[in-house]
View 1 (cartoon, protein in one colour):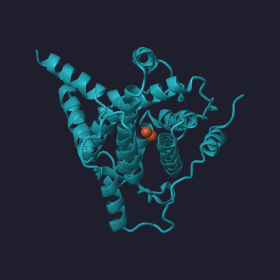
View 2: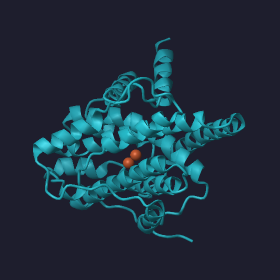
View 3: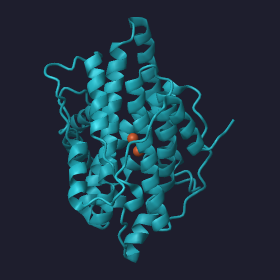
Length: 327
Ligand SMILES: [Fe+2]
Ligand SMILES: [Fe+2]
């Protein structure tokens, strides 16, 4: 059976008893926005001593971090700036809008579906909030697309995932890859002046939210691994290897297909990796761009409790690639 993304998300939410966070009714002042922003990027546990990975305290504090750093911005009140015809043309021609909207829609379902199966209520609620935030990203993008009249392909019907753990892992690791490159590209866009600052800043809470998401994912992974019996752990690690192979294959496949196929629904999910040229008039070299991604990655995570586990795969691969490129 195929059901619409929205109703599927609602079913999963009702299964977990998830209540969406309370949102301020009034349009926030600039001071309130700045305070929400500060809270969303800085968090330290009040627990003294170690947050031993896999322990009850680790789980409790990770979930608390996720709840307490929630940013209550509302997509509906975003004041989209007027764009010159040149800026509008640049924005419209970015080859990301279909893939971005659909990725958020799928992430929402995949996280919600997995959350609804978890026996641990605290973790389930944190993942459900993550799914809710993906839905809000989708709303931000949908409002932008509507405001600037960017043509979109029709969204596909979102199929409920069959293997919930597999889909959750693929979505979580894909977010780790995309967020790492998005951190650097966002900074490139901010510095370039290619788009008005007001438009770039609109996406700042979304980008920081992705940082929180992959922080939650990395800590869920570490907690989950630590609580598996050795033979379940061995199976799980094989699964993780298969997930990385799948992601690499998917991205290489898309990279080959991109450009040959003019179908607007087949935009490139490797955009975050390849598109500094679309957000800046200045040409970036590999080393320069990857160094910026690493720096931005460190900066965005710097405000969170040092005892929490960080996503390390992408930074490690890129540091290794940079070291190799020096030889
Ligand atoms: Fe998202
Ligand atoms: Fe996310």
